[in-house]
Image (cartoon, rainbow, N blue to C red; front, side):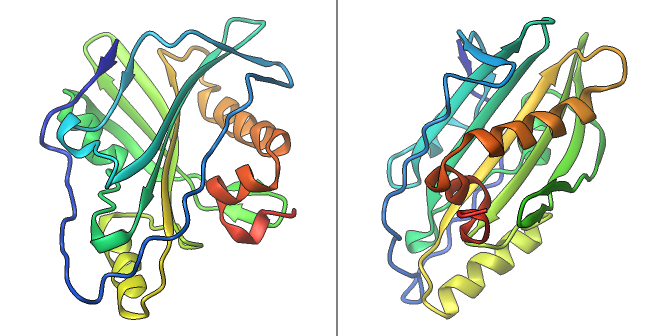
Length: 214
């Protein structure tokens, strides 16, 4: 079951003549299996509010759970958006998880070294009752990776001023109830493996143009 999380997620809805036209549609196809990982059925995932999930805002949401032979499972949730008319509403996990009843235990920069990019991701731990999620995520607008909501707004404003249409993405990878204190390293290793499994178009969608041929 897909779990909606209510209206508390922050949405950016400014509009006006400076809003750039939409960039071309870009789809993302995650592999069914790669390396030690294979996709398994997805029973539940935390999503953004239903009233913001219109085609005008999110062109595509990809949600998939991967399992490793030792039983480790990682959930990937990736939302692709268009900056057309400033309706991109990229909801950052540090806003969305509390809206679903989680408390944020920690949230800090967690750069991931990739070929051609030092990915400025963030590591977050969220807890609700007896459930704890370790999360690695990033937001990309064009080739900018905003680290917080204000940086996100600045990137969107810059695109509008220069009338530069951009695709945006929120990419989130999580482990539920991690054991052994290795979750952050496991998520980083997963991202590196996924990068290697994606073709150039998939790398562009997730990581921007600078790594598409890396």
